[in-house]
Amino acid sequence: MKRKTMLAVLCLAAALALNSCSEFKKTDSGLKYKFYVQNKDAQKPELGDVMTVVMQWKLKDKEGKKEKDSVLFNSNGNSQPLMLIKPIYQGDISEGLALMGVGDSACFIVNADSFYLKNIGVQKLPDFIKSGSDIIIDVKVISIQKKADFEKEKKLKMEKINAMIEERKAKEPEELKKYLKDNKIYSKPTATGLYYIEVLKGKGAKAENGKTVKVHYTLKLLDGTLIETSVGKKEGPISFVLGTKQVIPGWEEGIAMMRVGGKAKLIIPSSLAYAANGSGAAIMPYTPLYFEVELVEVK
Image (cartoon, rainbow, N blue to C red; front, side):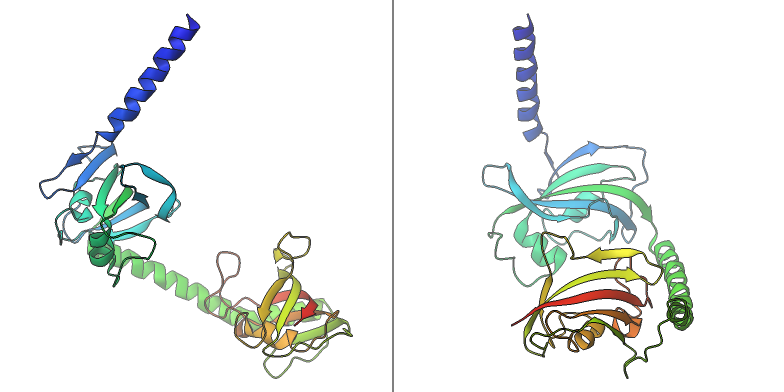
């Protein structure tokens, strides 16, 4: 009995798999699509509206199956805005987006040449995509806004961000001053503002511009928050060519003051690090940084 039940389950799964391949419908222009979730009463976009979506693009092979490791783009749950425009070619994904409402999710198959050259606007296909290939695009619609409302919201967000940046800029000198005082650091900065504190004098080769250096490091914020470290990691020390702007200016200057075997602390103002841009969520704009560094090798 159990064996028959299992066989029935397997047959049902196979039938569903085969059926899923034939679920795609076609618009009059030839765009292939299918909905995963569709709410016919949901708000639909009009031309010029801004749709906030999450997306994934994948290659489609000649047999019509999704290739392994063929993801071309994945927003990883991060939403992005798309303005709904008139279709500009037969089978344009814009035609499919117009069918979707808030909360809907769907899959579209588009021609790679048209999608990349006309929708994305690149001059030629990426080398790893053959002309005539198809792209499978999964889309979920998060929200729909009128362009004016979207622009207004965007402006308010930018005003808040700019106000935060200006506040950070004004506070940085005091933050740095307090840190130096609390940690009894009396060294004078270099002409650029870098604080270089030698911990162990190196006796090996000197780091010089044009040479490849290997450096172990630990990065913290001035409040002690650990951001990242190479110590104890499988990847080992970071390697770069000094003087080629592969690292922040504070590193270029600080590492050039060292010899192999040396250890130092670098207190780097934001002007020699990431300035008004910051770096990801961990390093805000106008954030001074604290590094412990060890020069491991010079070649």
